[in-house]
Each structure stands twice: as structure tokens, then as C-alpha cells.
Amino acid sequence: MTTDSALFTHLPLTLFRPLAARWAPIYADILLSLFAEAVARHQPIARDYALQVVRQRLMAQGAVEQTEDALEASAPSDDLHAGDDLLSARAHVILRHLEHCGWLKPDNLIDYTQVYSLPDYAFYLLRALKEWTEQGATPLSGPLSAIHDTLTAAVREGDLASRVPQAHRQTEQLVVGLQSLYQNMGTHIDRVLVQADIRAPLVGRSAVPPGPSPTNTGDSPRGPAR
Image 1 (tube, rainbow, N blue to C red):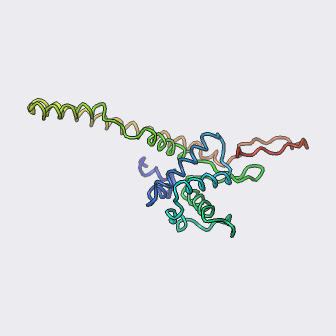
Image 2: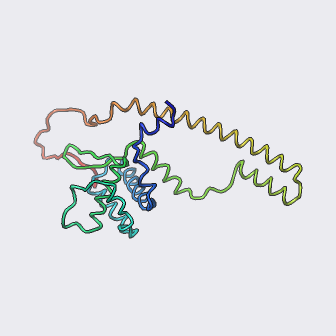
Image 3: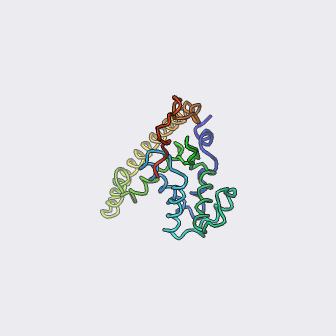
């Protein structure tokens, strides 16, 4: 099986649906906000807190009406209450939508607190998106800059006979480098997929080892930071 065909054996087919929607920037902002919380806390996010994060991002962007597609894509949420305002109701729906698309993994702690965590693939993708967002536009540099300078000099100095062949050689070197990069990326993806296959049997196992029954010390099970 090739890497291309193996990709969606490890990723949900619906994963990119929020980022391909008409209001993708809103979903991207929500996902990056949840990613920032996950990184800061180093533990699952309590569902109630995740709802607050989504609600705040919707309020900050005035984006309740722009996320109606989540209503169509997600099943009705059992957590909705008659007294919920429109903002809270939409936050419930969006969380359910992101869960359905595979960005969030629901779970219950030993004290029955509902939490969300990011699957490995979601964490890696959001980390890359965050880096691209922070870096902004990349200035022209390296081989592309050299090709640009060569062609600019050819026009400015009228030296097409020597400058254009030089730019052609530089372009060929760039193409070879890109081909090498593509092959290396394919090798890296193959290794990641193999590691995912190795970890698959471990998914779902409890992270808390069995121990003696708790004594009546007044301590309660520790939940996620709120």
C-alpha cells in the first residue's frame, strides 16, 4: 500500500471538513485556541472549560451565525438545555462537530468528569498550523532569491546570453533539491505510520495503574485543571 492510500487509514475522512468549510478561519481559530490550552495544561481539557473557550472565541469574532454548517453536520447534542442562550447552544454544537470530524477525543476521568484530548495527528497538524500562523509571510531567500537576482540582473544589464542559462542551471538545482525533500518526507511519513500501527493496540488502555482501594482520607480524585 502506498503512503497516499494509507493516509486515511490513520486519519478520519472527515478531519479536514471544518478547515474546508466556508467559515474555515473561525474553526481554525477555535482549534488553535483549544490547542493552546492543551499545550499549556499538559492534560485533557475539561469539557465545560472547552465550552467556555469555544464560547469566548465565537463572541470575540461575532461568529455565531457563520457556523450554522455545524448544525447540519452534527447530530443533536444531549447536553443542550432549554435555558441555553444562542452562544452556549452553538458552542455545544461546534464541540460535537469537531468531535465528529476527529479533532477532539472525548473521555471520562475516574471521577466521571468529561474531558477532551487531542489525538496525535490533530496535535501535530495544529502545531504546524500555529507555526505557520506565527511566522507569517516568508521572505524570498535561498535558491529562489538567487534565481530572482540572476533574472533581474539579466534584464537590467541586458546580459541574457549568460544570465538566462545561469538561471536555468539554478532552477535545475532547485528542482533536484525539492525532489530529494519529497522523497525524505515520504520516508518520514512511512515511519510515522509504522509507529502509529505499533501504538494502536495501546489506545484505550487506562493510564492509571491498578492499586489498592482508596482509604477514607478525605481526598477526592484529582480532575483536570479548570
